[in-house]
Length: 117
Image (tube, rainbow, N blue to C red; front, side, top):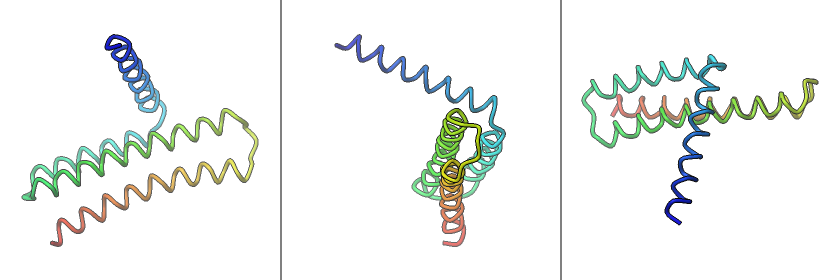
């Protein structure tokens, strides 16, 4: 049982890494969010803030990356289904993009509160 679970874990890790690499190679938006996170994390480490504030900033940055990965997955799935323009396809892509924007806004709000408080 332990071996089976380990193999399942190893497979999931390999598939996740493959997904990250595919997105990194083909999605410029991920590059932009990674660099934004590098800057944000650097500032979070350099500025005086509580461990909880720092953890919040770092975690929200990671969530922005997760949202971008999901957005890319949705875009790829929609594009695979059909190359035709369709209102529902556009709505799916726009909604996924909005999810990235909302997580980025959450990170910005956290920064604002930490800096103002």
